[in-house]
Image 1 (tube, rainbow, N blue to C red):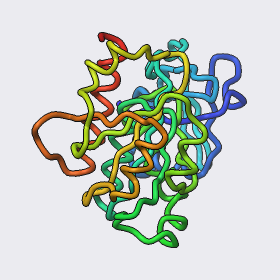
Image 2 (spheres, rainbow, N blue to C red):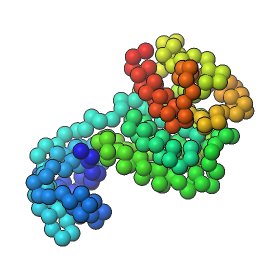
Image 3 (cartoon, rainbow, N blue to C red):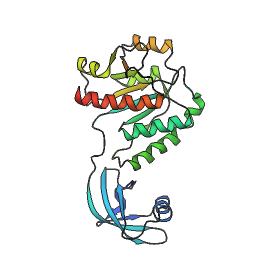
Image 4 (spheres, rainbow, N blue to C red):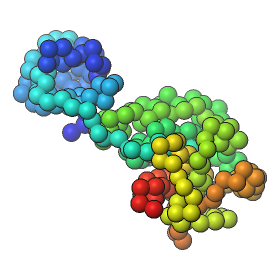
Length: 243
């Protein structure tokens, strides 16, 4: 069951009162939720509320809280993804998958072989944040990732000490081998960089080598960029915990 985001101020005396017009429309008018049916809510303090709809009025509704607890549905790693922006449907899929896999932030990356113009990317940030928010609701995630403003490689790497680039060309190691040989501090941010469908340019590969940023392989198969993102994040999550 998807959960809905509320404010702690909506909670009083074991009841949740929803006055928000959009939330009212979605739950009461679109979903046609009836009195007696269960609804999940999550507030900004990551408190999950299991409720039952008890009263519906013309502009608001009230739910009785049956159980409340701190939600544990979030990743115990500070992973950020910097991904060269893809064309529309693939980009939406990439943001959804990154959100479902628990990343703390998504950085739209403009690379030499990027499929989308800079001006288009800058106008899409708000839309992509909404895509991520909808994924949060669907997977009942406790925290909400941030979709940052567009950055270029030379800017994004300045903010992180632990950086992993997934690229088949000139790859030095697989991630499990790398994680065994190099201590990864899972209490600090980890930046995962994924390139475009056409791959990184020679200039960008030279940049990685100059900055001593490791190039990691995902194996013998060649993935589409949005699939590579999913595979890379899964690999890092498993590798950090189990290497």
